[in-house]
Length: 297
Image (cartoon, rainbow, N blue to C red; front, side, top):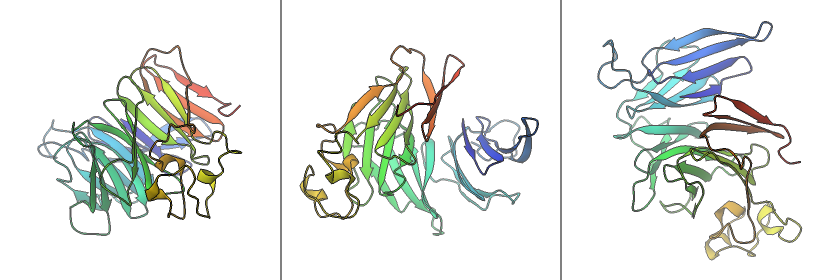
């Protein structure tokens, strides 16, 4: 269901059986071996019954810590060197948790199947989220979440209706922007780790979109200006913030965002993507993995 590098050699894998496994990658002979396994980290009824495993839908790592979420609404915190879970929040959510990401070292974000984004502080012993945000009206399931690499209050989510939602977790409980995107489920969303004015989303409809808010930088330096204050191009609530971002404007698509479908002739679902430097990698229902090495060419 999901995979993440723990470090250079180890990969954490989340399975639909509810099991979480750490694999070690042996570079000398290009093989994988199971390094550690938590059987039925996620389960519906009872961890000890022969069936009953619930899908582990998402995993995120901050070595040595590993956080997993699942269909059972459970959040687990593991450490790579410990056999048992450090902590489990058994009834974290009454619905399916679809994805998780770190907000800060001790805080995580989860998205669920009823359109909610929740923040959890792992230092607190309470099994309650510290904040809850939600899409208004229709409770559209959210499938994916990512946070801005430099401005941790900016969060992007995507869901069953293909919409891209941008949230500012410092204010309000609703998204700052709702952007019409794909024609079917959005499966993944990623800010570029070193160029976060660029965002990538992929969908069941066979498209992979590159959202670029860095356009016309010469004419519009305001939203890239990290230190000073600027009122240009921003709604009133953003004027007094010391750090401004194109993602938080009331109408981010106006004159300032270029959207490109990077695979226009594809019809099969694009299930997963990742991006680093000039490289984009994605996997589709064509049972193929594609690599684009000239993302910004």
